[in-house]
Image (cartoon, rainbow, N blue to C red; front, side, top):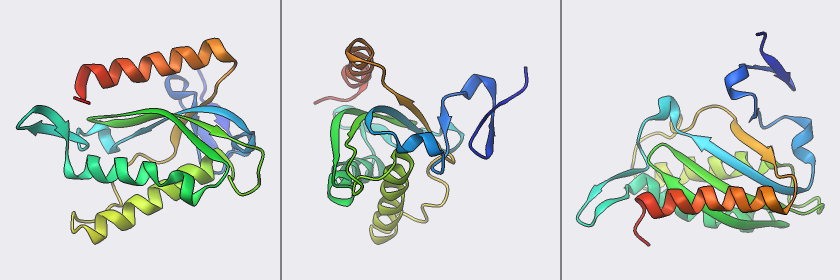
Length: 162
């Protein structure tokens, strides 16, 4: 099966929901489910702590920068999210307000802010934390939103003590 094309990038069939930040359809307002994968799916965001599996130093920076998304992108509302060892999965509500930007721009701002925070914290360089692009899906109605939220909660309950 030939790869599907999304924007200027060829997308392998097994990852056909992958969205590059420049994807024009990402400009659509609405509810978006997104997943950002670490490079090579390396478990960088969590590790064993005194209380069992917990966020790593990098994972805590990811969480802090994720909470700041609304400051950098007005018109974006954060819904549920979970940080797992090798990914961040979240639901975002993007208004039609020009200040919020396209989903790709929102994700790019987040990645840039995280890269700066990693350097300031002295955790090394941030050039290889995330895979290029991200998995993005425009949620189609309330039933699908419930499924996204359920999947996020299941990940949180399975790994992250809250």
